[in-house]
Length: 535
Image (cartoon, rainbow, N blue to C red; front, side, top):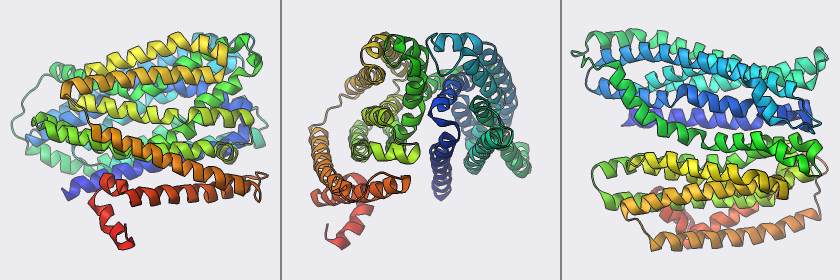
């Protein structure tokens, strides 16, 4: 058990550090290329993320499951056969995805850029998509190797390779952009092309790390293989069939957010062509899909990881027909999700001016988009959790159907809402699509498990009241801070965030402990410490 906990902790820490770096690097990169050119970056990464998901097709997760399954039976030979076949498959799908994205970059750019667009040309968008496509040759191969190590419950290669991959990517991205702009007198567009190529360079670094661990562990794995029981001689075709059944819902779970962003990428500029901000539509799209989106995902990162740790329990309880335990776990999941996400969303929304200034610059449109977009973080956290619950109770097919219905609503409403409300229209269409998808997920959960809980409703109502109290305190503190500290520099904005955020967090923590809801949700370990302080 200690090995499992240690492995999980290592993997979680590596993922968390990688995510944090993925947010922070945008600050210097934004300063280098500016608001007008940062949008080019998201034109490349949104189709790249979609194509990457299709190339990998959830195989690494399914692959680790199969390796672990046959290892537990003492059949190490089957896992090695699957590794050899899987790596070849990933190389083929990765190269095919690269060719597809590279050669369709032109048509995709033509759909994306409107003729009234004054910031970027079709050629600009085509070239950044082509530059990022090279990463597809390497990343699927690397991801499957990570799945192999995870099948042996060896998490260190995944954690370390992800972290090293991210560090190398960021160093190359920032260093390359700096050299292009300050040494070679290149254009910001060229700097962005070098920046998106960093995905390929970072992936090479990740592969080297995995190769190091493979060389280190291969003698041990070969020894296990030599002692392997007689192989079950499972046909690869049968394994791939089962992998596909398991992996498809995983794919849809992973690409839900990029799909909604892809709809914006394809429709936003054309829909904005009839508005007064048509000439700057790429700037607004960059704010929506990149600069504000990075910040919106922060509260999602805080809450989802914590809540998702509960999901394996649901699978266990459901399999053992312990339905009361399933319902108790659902109660805890929904409460913790809102308890952690809502105060972060409320606080960040009230400090949207300061946050946008610290990460980017003082921008009235940027701050406004951020404040309107932040509440969607609650939906971004809810969808993967409800979808994972559907997986746990063996209702995976509904993940695909519900997501597609939500996505079709987004696609149908996006253009008319953008034409009417500009960026707010795109946000509204995302909200409607996610609300419908999540609502349908919850309906399936309710019907399958006969799930209902008045206690959860009461607790969620209490959490909302706590956040209203915190928001009122933050409002008055912010008004007081305005009298003494302005937003003349980024340092001043950081001070404002620390003062206001610190007081808001302290108030929320105090009243959560005083009402006892924090202890009830976060367990006995918290109660052990809070009793010392009289809570």
